[in-house]
Length: 257
Length: 285
Image (cartoon, rainbow over all chains, first blue to last red; front, top):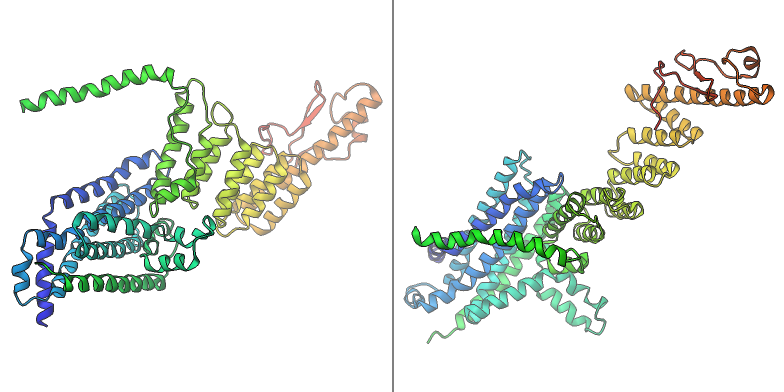
């Protein structure tokens, strides 16, 4: 019980800290601006304003959310180390794992607030154009949020292994590679010499960000079955646990001398 | 405030200079500066997870390109139209309107469009494969066959097939019959109208009945024309009226249309037609 309390204390602190980041406001501002720009672009598209507003809103949420998750994710731990604020914290009755989980939970909540603001922007734009407030959009938003949690966990994991600059690059590379998971799976079609085992391993190991992409389906009102959402949630949970587990193991064995 | 004035004034100069540069460079740039070397597949690979957004961007570029060529270009050149539409639809194969409007842009006669109706139909067929439940794309394929390729039979066949799709309106079948009728395929048109008459109700049924009667009128006119030809062959002249004794003997069709209005006879041209005063009369297409 005491452990949970400590984790929540770190999480709430992390949330307060990250929400004050100026870059966060810039990114959310640009995401909302991009969504609202759908109002103008829709007029240029010949009867496709609703599709463009939804595509822009969800796309902006995905891109800017990923940038926020990487940028803040890699700084969560490294900042504490650089500012030397980590040491008095760890001197208190606070486990390293509790610290890390608290950090992740705090950022997860920050991401949730950001995604909520961007979703609100999207619905507001639809409302201004007199379009229906399609609740199915939330399925795509949910997919995006799960993806962002994974990005955040990867950023956190890399930041426990290396400097924040290198961690940013590593996270970015893994995220991009994860978005190309379908290419990796079918790579044999263009490079027949690549060993099948390697392809399969890469396909299983890299996070498959395509799993979380329901944007096209919801924009075209293609039903997303609840079973699919459950499976995707399960995938995200398992992957998050593994990545955060590696991060905790690394962080536990890290020598801060 | 003062220190901002100088940079702001300089910033205002940028568009002023750019307009002049554009005016001078337009003579030097023979080709559009749109990037068209990429295929849809390339763009798709470069934007994983954001294909829909990229499709929107390419669609906006397509609309802008078509509009600028159609409205402003001196030498209207639509060579980038097809690659742009292809990229858009490769990025988002469900983008129904991109197929439909893209096909219109492609099919319209030059200089209003690219003047490539066959390419337009191919695009629509690709759209139909990607969206097998879309009766609207099928409807467009039918209409394009009729209006751009002058193939009423194929158009009608496609429209009849489209009318069987879930959610398709009944008027697709009547359009098919209409196309066949104007294309001279009277027997097939009669079968389609008859089918519609038996299956529909209300206005649609009334319309089918009207068209069946109109087909009867057209058959009667054909019989009148044959009788006129025979009369001319025998008498080396045209009759004064359709009721002239020699003509009546040759005629094996009613003198009035199905709503009871006498057929119009043009003695100068030797033609019979539905009278303008009849509710069956329609302006020739």
